Image 1 (cartoon, rainbow, N blue to C red):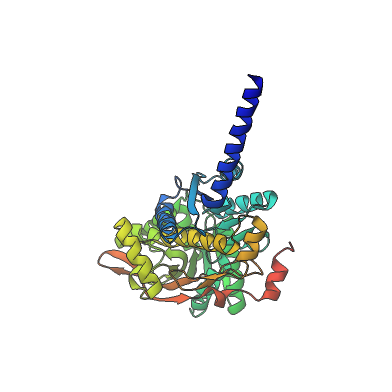
Image 2 (cartoon, helix red, strand yellow):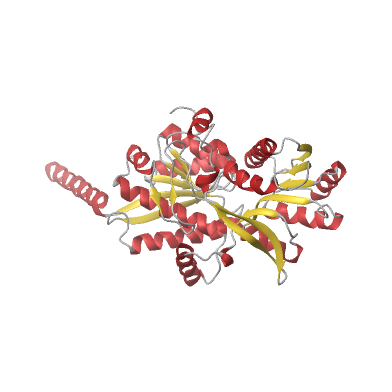
Length: 401
């Protein structure tokens, strides 16, 4: 009986091994995805729809070298510690080939640090802090979205033309807001040495008390304002600013405000003439975007937000990386990604070897009111390649691997 048991056990192990081998050869490739779904649904729900569409398209086209692409998604709740826990579970329990996603910059940095320590490939989708590819960059982390530096450089190009000399800033008091203000001030002061920075307001992210913020900025009497708030904070700031006349006869430059997820909730309260980065999906007439727009609207019966583009392109990029590497080995994934070019709804993009930043660009335009809702007008696409520092500058900013 003992001999029979051992034979049976041995057969079971052999069968399990064969099944595992078969799965590895012809089964599926799993990607781990982490984002702040419960905290920021205005962005992350369209983002989820975007990556779901991408997964569907990848698998309909034959998957990753014949293997089905599967995304396992987790909610970090807007907490870096929860994001790190999710990353650990995805790697150790789910055996994912790579990590993707994250929204908030502090969370992106936490997952990037985890990826570096555990030697896991990480494709950061949304976090915008410059640190993720420069001061705290590492060989295992790549980033899709145009960084704070890139978007600031695009906005400064327009802002420097304004006659305003006295500037105030309003930004959420965490990594993203601090990074955005620092780089905008640096680039703006380089172009316009005559600028004077007269006030800074740092409300807590998601908890702005707009009345005192507006009052303090008004008291400083700036000629122009840089805004970095978004989401519910932006709505509160605009409402209070409109009520108190803060924006009257003042120029405003605003990160992200032209993205539909942030512009749409303002409705008829949308202030006109703000210089913004965003996503005027209704005005983009290119074959790449038309194809994406038709597929998205057919699947979801809804218009895309910027989050939709980010989610879609994150998974499209991950699939292209895995297909080129033809492996899930992190070192081979890194080698495949450095210098890799691919299509996107905004045109071709490349992941730079020197800092692992993609060259995805952004649209720059002005806010306007149309039929009782906010829109972007006079928008122009700015290619990411045109708004990045030289290789020599990047080498000073980024630690050696």
